[in-house]
Every structure is written in structure tokens, then in C-alpha cells.
Amino acid sequence: MQTLCAFANGSGGIVLIGVRSDGKIIGQQVTEQTRHDIAAARDRFEPPIDVAIERIEVASGRAVLVLIVTGTSDSVPCACDGRAFERIGNTTRRMSQERFEALLLDRAHSRRRWENQIADEITFKDIDREEVSRIIEAARSTGRLVGPVGRSLPDLLDRLGVRRKGRLLRAAVVLFGKTFMPDYPQCELRMARFRGSDKTEFLDQRHIRGPAFKLLEEAEIFCQRHFPLPGRIEPGRLQRVDRPLIPPDAMREILVNALIHRDYSIAGGAVSLPIFDERVEVWSAGRFPAGITPESLTSAHPFVQRNPIIAEVFHRAGLIEKWGRGTNRVAEMCRATGIAPPEFAEISGVAVIVFRVDVLGSAGAYPQVAPQVTLHVAPQVAAILKAATTPSSAVELQRAAGLKDRVHFLREYLQSLLEKGWLERTIPDKPRSRNQRYRTTELGRQVAYGLGSKKEDEP
Image (cartoon, rainbow, N blue to C red; front, side):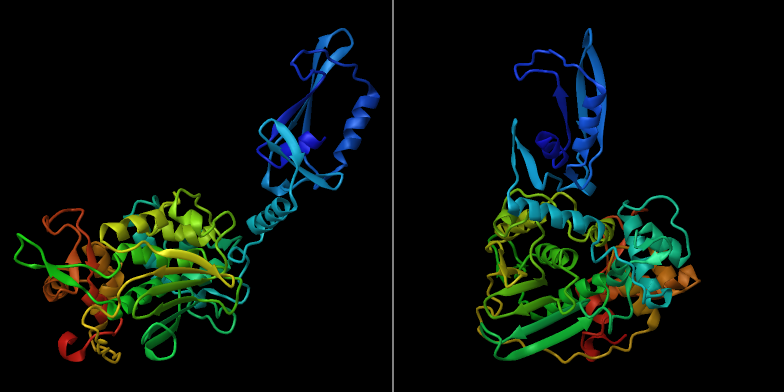
């Protein structure tokens, strides 16, 4: 029975009764009492496990009993007579208390995660339909959402897996919500630029509550405002070569991980982005997921999802893979640009990532941060720029702007935004390609979200 318990706590297995340890088949007599004994033995398991029994006749009056058990998440961890067992190689041994508790937490998490609970206080009016449509289009453009998706908001949310039996999940609020207080204060991003190496003096700060994809965009914009862009002249080249402080894709990977792997059950938690003179940090509420240590993130490690529903939507939008290589790629990108890979740590139950970089720059002067202003661009322009934060076709951008005249849209809007440098082509050398998409530039992002200078950016 201990071996059956160990198989149930693993990937399943078979126990043969009537076969010696050296493999010789001897069989045994199987009586009515034998059947009663096996049935009674099942009651020794907690929680109950399903044991299939087969009988193979080997000689007159003798048979081999085959007991088959499958390993299932609903029965893990399983105990026999109050003790749990596990298989290590070809042996059965008692499971450690630490391992037992970890499996118990995993079982509870698989069925009752924060993200997959019903958001009873949320209705469709609290969901940002434009944000849902934007992510649907991004998922279709990446090829990770195929087939008809429907047009109604409920249909779209069903395709993204954020409804259950017609009721919205908490994951829907994190991804597409419009209302966060008082029930979802944790959907927050805190950003600050500090003078020096501690938190004594603020140079700039912002606190934002919003859906996850928009928090990602706001974090990237804040980095663009405060990261210097070092440049140098390389031999054989007439133009200066600009080197970003942190590779943009590496910074985005870390920010995405902070949003999808954080512990949303911590109501007062948030994603924090403090920037100091000599380092950039990203803090994410909650410990690293079970099975992941700070040390493992710089080597081969599994892809463990604390919030698989939220992670799946990010995957469909083309922002993550599912191979556990994200942090390894970040390290590779950093080394390729001549900076140290980030450091990973857990501090007081919070996951922390640190980039050791010279934010202040060799000049030793603090940049003047212009006050944020609201740019008075046309609503159609703002809609196009926001839609193009994920690569979009001309048809998709025209639809986002609500314009019916295609010639007018192409001439007065699309071409104009390309000339201003607010949009760019994804295939610049083939402007007429049928696979052509358009995306917002860094300047266009600032215009779209009201972060530029009126004098420079007003149309």
C-alpha cells in the first residue's frame, strides 16, 4: 500500500501481487477474503485514490493481481495511514514534511487561485471593451488566436478564457478592468526616479491603477523619460551609434514577468519601478513561484505559472513564450550590449530584480523632466497611436479611428503620422507588402499618452 501511495504522489504506477522481487511469477490464491482485504486497504488512503484491479490466471487456483493507480493532481499529496510516500528511483520512501506541504499548496492553488475566482462585484460595464478588442487583434496578428472570435463582448472574453459559466473572473479585471477601487487596489504600478542611491529625495513619481497591458506601457514610457541614451562614434561609421541603457526587450521581459507572476492575492501589493542613479529595480508583490529560486533564473529552469490565465493572454498577445527562457534571454541581451545581467532576489516576501547601470550618465547632471501635459491631438490620432502600440494593419487602424473614407484615412492620417515619426512600418523596405503592419514609435507613445511637449508635438 505504501508503494501505491508513492505512485499516486507521482505519475502513477503498477503493483504486482504474486510476483517475487527477482521477477519470478508464482501467483497466489485469490479468495473472497482477498478482495475484502484490498477493498479495506483503499480506506487507508487520504484523500481516496482510484485503484484499478486486474486478475491474471497463471496456474490452477493461482493468479497475479495487478493494481493500477494513476497520479492525478486532485489526489496529490496522498497519505496512507496518515503518512505520505514517494518514489525515488526504484525505492519507496516516506515523504518529507516540506515536500508534503509544497504539494498540498500546489493542489489548493490549481483549483482555487486568486485569478480564477468569480469577480461577483464586476459587470460588463466595468470592462474596457476597446482594450479587449486591441488584445484580440494583437493575438490574431501573432497567429495565436485563430478562427472566428465573435463580436459581442461576452464572446471575446470567452475566447480569452476570462469567464466561467457566464461569470467574469478576477483575471478579467486585471487584464481589462476600468474600475479598481475599492475591490482591486492591487492592480497598481508605482514608479519613481530618486536622486542618488536611496529614497530620500524624489525627482519624479507616478502611481497608476489600470489594466495590465496599459501598466506595461506606462512603465516603458517612464523608463524612456528617465533612461539616458548613451552614444559613441565607432570606427568606420560616420553616424553616432546609440546604445540604450538597458536593452528595451530585456526591460520589457522583466516588467511582463512582474505583471504575470506576481501574487495578486496581496491586496496592498503592486509592481514597483524605482530608478536610482546607479541602478534600476523592479519589485513584484509575492515570492517567486513554487519551484523557482533566484539562483535558478540564470540557468535552465521550468516555466512555472502562478497566474496561468493572465499568462495565457499575454502569450496570445505575443509578449511571452512558454519555455522558461525569458530571464535567460534577458541575461544574454544584457551581455550582448555590455552590461551586467540583472540580479534576482527575494526581500521580505517580494520578488526583486536589479539592473546595475549608470542611470545618471557620465555627464553627472540630472535631466530636466518636463511636466506632464495633455496634448490636444485629434481623437482619431490618439486612437490610431494607441491601437498601434501592438503592430496593426492599415484596416485595423482605420477601424480604430472610426473613419469610413479609406483614401482620406491613408492620406491625411496614416501618411501624416509616418512623416511625423509617430508611426513606423514593421517592414520598412517593402512599404506595399500585404503583410505590412504599423506600430507606434517612442515619440508616438508619448503623444498618445500626453507625455510630450506642446510646442514640439501639437499637430
